[in-house]
Length: 342
Image 1 (cartoon, rainbow, N blue to C red):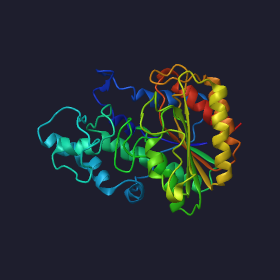
Image 2 (cartoon, rainbow, N blue to C red):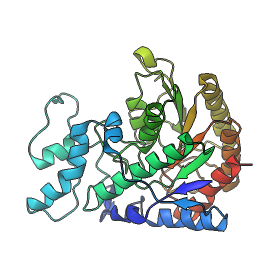
Image 3 (cartoon, rainbow, N blue to C red):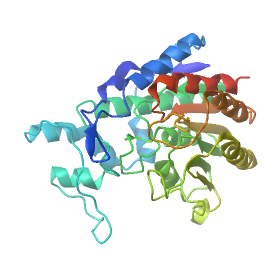
Image 4 (cartoon, rainbow, N blue to C red):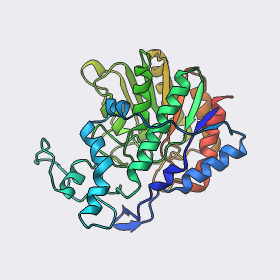
């Protein structure tokens, strides 16, 4: 299995994250990547490649160009204004406020493009986010070029990023960029399977009105889990996309049997879609010891997850999302990948 990765991910690591009223060390930290690489080494998955340069034209097929420009330029403007700390949004265009105009003030623009306040922009954000997107693009091209399966070790993750919002540690939507890349390379139909504990709200919103990309997400119920305001079972798409979104929200304490039943249903929907390619948003935070999640999958369960996905026999691009039990993230990730090839 080809693995695409880059050390440039280390450029993204803010000073802190707002969590339960306290500024804490971010859960989305560089050592997550280190543990995955160590587990890949131990499993003999050493067919590694660096990403090609990011193709911003393709990024902008998924993301609003004004948003991409904001991400690329914001830190320079922030520091040029005399500010020295990480940029954390504190005001958002919420109910009753106008959303049709982008403020010129830096803090106003930051809030306009932000989904949530736990995610900071720092000096290395654009570098890391753009290289993470490049990893997804390279992974997609490998699969489009004939590789049956490839893994993009993306960091920062991407599935919470919508067309024009960042949050949930995500800036560019790597899974959506990969899915759209398959279509740009000639695929007629693509599926995105999101097994991260948190709902892939950004991916859902990007493909909400489209029938060429089926989106299926297994996640903590939005009444109980971030991002709270999307991910209900009755969200199925609209217009041409109606029936091409499938959500499987589950309650605290969900164990593997119930979770796997949802996976089987999602895989059935994917098989019926008959996609030319599959993108898997590979979060492993459904793990029983994850500090910001509430499912109870074990490390052995992730091997079964990989087997079930592999049984679809669809060319598959895995892109890394969440997983915050740092000591176990490598084992759980590699268990999915090795299970896929069983």
